[in-house]
Length: 219
Length: 219
DNA sequence: AAAAATTATTGTAATACACAAAATTTAGTA
DNA sequence: TACTAAATTTTGTGTATTACAATAATTTTT
Image 1 (tube, protein in one colour):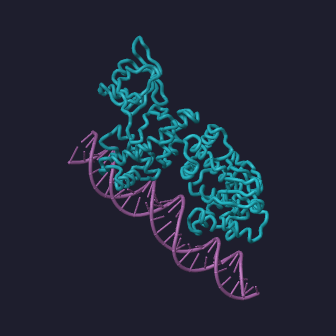
Image 2 (spheres, each protein chain N blue to C red):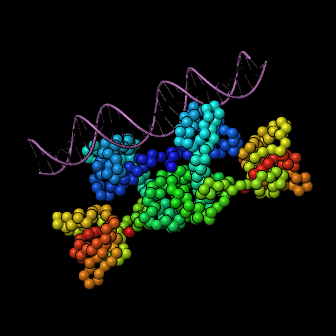
């Protein structure tokens, strides 16, 4: 099964967004992510649905079918393997490789992917810490911890909150922390459990109380 | 300057065919090579001409402009570097890599090509013995010898004939040897200078007299 | 100079993707 | 429950890219 570059991009997008809204990825969410108009997304969702790649219910959003999930995982796998290649072998910096991997991920050859994987030493994670699905589409389960349990230099993705009071959520909002946000622990103070963390381009201080209420998936 | 995959394929084709007919590559030749109809080729030649990539004179064929030649060489360079990667690093066999390199050659990133080149140790030739253009489009000049001067295991491309009598040319025709044909010397007999050579899928015997009248470009 | 081969032109078609405007559905709210 | 706003789909267009058949023109061969 081969799909167009564009179709592969949509599948990958739905795969990523599905983690944030497992019940169905909205047209709007996809259109923002891919930077197209909602009506274009509807078109493509119908095409993907016809091909049995997504379950698409009008007005309700889309989820990947098993077939679609495998196709998406294949692209994700290729993307991340190429990123490892670019960083480990070609000595790119980890923040320069995304665009190039975006192109390489569309190259079609199972044999190539298999040999690349071997050549790279069967890596489990890409340079950003994201897990690399294996050839059958299995992604290594990652642990869910409280941010407060992490140590300096560890990192992970925000996957939930323990407390969900609106003041806390507003705080997170102000800090641009939401489900899916990557967090990097730059420093941790033994005395009071406070931390310095990195969120996107920003670095800031958080108290132990905050850290004890954020679930992090570590990689 | 970025071009469509298809445009890059045409440029590459004209680059290759130009060696055989430097005065101008015919529409038919291109259509055979790319496996399309002549009318489609005419269309594309006009587009490439509009973009200043080829000199196209109706009924007279096309040649690459300087701009077009550089674009073609860039693609050829990428193709051959990737072939080296596939064979040297990923352990593909030299006869399995063409299709995959056909895809990889279209990936756009000068930085990537430069780093790949370094990673591979700045190779001069691809796994088939074809020279790899450098980043400025310079191709290492190769030597022209008589086939009879080659030894066992050497190989090269037929670039001309010394004698051009029709019987000789008919002989070459029968053997599918023409300008551009790759020849691989499998064995050579000291006693009479005869050889066993490989031409495409065929292997056969040739006499010293034949070998003394064929010019070969070695790599 | 006519016939054959090659090549260009013209008109058409398919594919793939995207968008604006209008219509519909859903969700939130009074 | 009714109504409004937001989200989503429909419909109708548009563009870009590539390809081809049929016909016309040109070049080459005989």
